[in-house]
Image 1: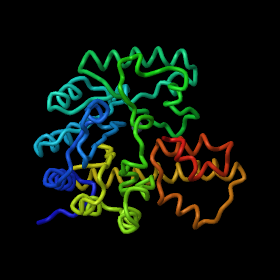
Image 2 (image 1 turned 180 degrees about the vertical axis):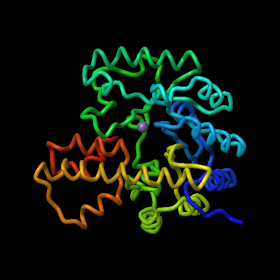
Image 3 (image 1 turned 30 degrees about the horizontal axis):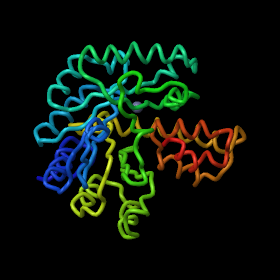
Image 4 (image 1 turned 90 degrees about the horizontal axis):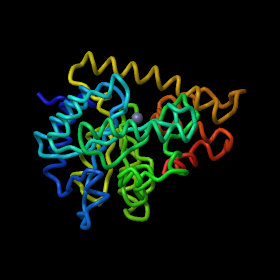
Amino acid sequence: MKNNLDFTFVKYKELCGTIVESKYATLTFTHYFSLKNIPEKFIILRHDVDRRPENALEMAKIENNSGITSTYYFRRKEEVFKPEIIKEIANMGHEIGYHYEVLDKAKGDLEKAIKIFEKELNEFRKICDVKTICMHGNPLSKWVNKDIWKKYDFRDFGIIGEPYLSIDYTRVLYLTDTGRKWNSRFSVKDVVGANVNQAIEKMKSTDDVIRLINEGDIEQMCILAHPERWSDSFGAWLKELVWQNVKNIGKAILVRRAYYGKEGGGSVSEMMQEIFYMPTDEETVTLFRGRKRRKNAYYGGFKNLL
Ligand SMILES: [Zn+2]
């Protein structure tokens, strides 16, 4: 029987199978930032490992069995930074990157932050080679971790790219599994036709993503899948769903305050929209940063992300 429960490993296997059968090449970020000849059609699979590293290992195995390589950005947190899991994923040929949150850890102190960065990067490099990094966004923090690169240069640390800073998302379609539905944040109007854009806007389920890949109209895509949002049993799946929704209701309230100020504002339906819109941690951070800019904060804020 076909399993149609979305955001399960069974569904992820189906997605990987589709990619392998398609005309798209799969690239890691290191490939993308260093190859001289980039294939015309490619998909970069990105995974931010915020929690549950064992789920990342499961995903890595599924990809490996399908013949796909991807990139895993691990946080340097006790419950996430598991050298044996990181090593196992790297040994499959996947790229390991560092999901840094150093401005949060240093409470905005740049000098302290760069020291933490260097120390943590070295801890990763004791396990495997690390050439790319990607910031983690914490919705409760007032700092945006990538801002550290306004003062320092990651190239000085042998890093060749940061997905939030080194990719032109007007050319590469960016899809993310936010709150267990697929979202695209960026307009690709210049490179694809109106029909394709409509299809992207309506996209929700992994089946929609599979369809998009089969149609093959979009040349370049970056797909972000958080391993902790995918699970193999119905119980775990349900638990994650509840957790996501609890978190997102909290986020929606905070986002609303960021936008409207402390007094609140907006109708209940707007509030509901925000709950179901469900921004990612990274996006929420950007919204918070936009608090002072108010009007830019809501949608304009996404541009700051790039
Ligand atoms: Zn993250």
